[in-house]
Structure formats: structure tokens, C-alpha cells
Amino acid sequence: KLMGGLALVLAVGLAPVSLHLRSPALAGRPRREAAHELSLLRLRGGGASPTEHVLIAAGNGLNVEEVAVEAFDGQKPGTSGLRRKTAVFMQPHYLEAFVQCVFETVGADELRGGTLVVSGDGRYHNAAAIQTIIRMAAANGVARVWVGEGGLLSTPAMSAVIRERDGGCALGGIILTASHNQGGPEGDFGIKFNVHNGGPALESFTEEVYARSQKVSSYKISTDLPPVDLTTQGRYTFCAVAGGPPLLEVEVIDPADDWMTVMRSLFDFDALRALIARDDFTFAFDGMHGVAGAYAARLFVDELGVSSESLRNCEPKEDFGGGHPDPNLTY
Image (cartoon, rainbow, N blue to C red; front, side, top):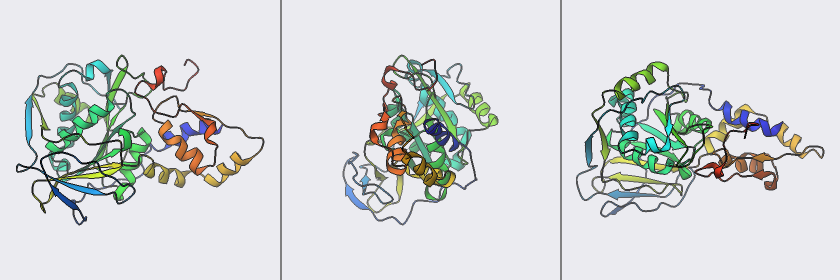
């Protein structure tokens, strides 16, 4: 029963509980400055105050390029976003055209100076897509981007980050997931936008995205922003000149912190620990190499005292280990 409870614990974070305003301007944070050509250093540290390096460009700021593109047919998202074969999303300009339509639907005033969350379920093409979206976010005026370590955030964890982190200042989040659909080069890929209350975008929003996708003619992207190391928690800040205001901040965060805060407020962990400690209770959890595996040890082992031997297949993989991420009897 507790094994099934993880699905409840993971799913309950989807429910929006409050509305929050968009991000305040970035200011007042101590930084170490290092003037050099545009290249990213690996940041070390974590928690609330990771080590920070300021990156100084040789030019006058982010180089924004407006790339001409022809509209793609069928970019109509539902409440679960846009899902297509991975190969479709990997077509030149396909992802970029759709993301630009999302940004334009959000609106320039909301994006400017705002905080955006970007992560996914770890399926094939996840990491590359995140890097593209970061560069597009910078070009469209976003001031700060949060990314889960490894590029991972489950949908409930994404909701928790939007609603809880830094007072709930995020304007929303882009989630790269095709839910229970298979991953890998021959599998599926998906993208959806969660709004500032942590919940999925309303139909009016997705309809506007679709309308824009039918006539989109260009997208904006920062061409001189190098890839961010998503494997280590830390903060990257990009400035035009030493001592100048930040043009973009990218922070790689612990993917479970905000989610665990929400879970502790919703569930009686003491009662769950008492259940697990009973001699007549046994437990096993199969992460099926999906994104839930990234949370299993933190929840079950660290918080509830389950033996790590009770967890299996909890390493997220791009193709879900060749299996299926949906826990039903068919698979």
C-alpha cells in the first residue's frame, strides 16, 4: 500500500494552492567576479547559498539573434502539453518555434526580469532541449532560470518549485515530459507550461500558443551563451561588465528540496515511519528508471527509514532502461 502511496505523494504536488507574483529584480547577492571570454566555469556548492561565479563577456551583453523560421503544422498543445515523436522535436527549429510561441503568450512584460523554471523527466533529448530553452529565455528577457540538478524535475516537483521556492516568485515553468509515453530516440518527447500557481496552463493559454504557432516567423535566442553544467548544483551569473547588473542568472538546484517541504506539510511522516518499522510490514519500490527514482531515496530512505535495498531501478535513464515508465499491469 505504501508503494502505491508514492504515486499519491508524487501526484498530490500537482494541485495549485496559492497565487504568487512574479520575480523581483536580482540584487544584493555577494559575488566573485572573474573577467574572461564567454565561457562557463563549473560552480561548486549547493543548498541555499551555492558558490557563485560572475561571467564577464567581451562584448556589451547577450548577443540576441532573431532566427527566421517557417511555422510547423500541428503544434497544438493540450493540458498535458505538446507530445510528438522525439525525432519530430529534434527537427531544426521545431522546439524553438514552439517555445517562442509560449514566451509570446506569457508576454514580454511578464518575462522581463522574471524567474522561469526549466526541467524535465530525463528522457532522451532532455538535456539538449534545456540548454536551448535557457538561451531562448535569456533572449526573451528572463532574468533568472532555475533548473533541477541533472535537468530533472517531476511534474509535482516542478509545481512545488514554482509555488514554494524564494517565496513563490517564479512566473511559471517549462516541463519536458511525455508522461507515461516511452522515451529514447525512437520514443516520444513532450513539452508543457505550468503557470505561476504551479498548475497546468488553462485552455485559453494553450489555444493562444497554438494560434501563434500557425503564424510564427522567427524566434529569439542568445547565440553566445555557452552550455550550463547541469550535473552539479550551483549558480551561474552572466554580466556585460565587471560590477554591472546581472543579465542572466542560472541556478542548478536540488530537485527534491521544495517538493519535500510540500510533502511534509501534507502527510504524517511519523505515522509512515511507524508503519515501516513494524515487523509485519515489508516494502519494495520500483522506480522503473523514470524521474520518480530521483526522489525515492530522499523520501523513503532519508525521511522514512526504508532500507536502500528495498529500492530498485531508481536511476533515471533517457530510455527508461528500455522499459516503460508507467506502472500498470500491461508493462
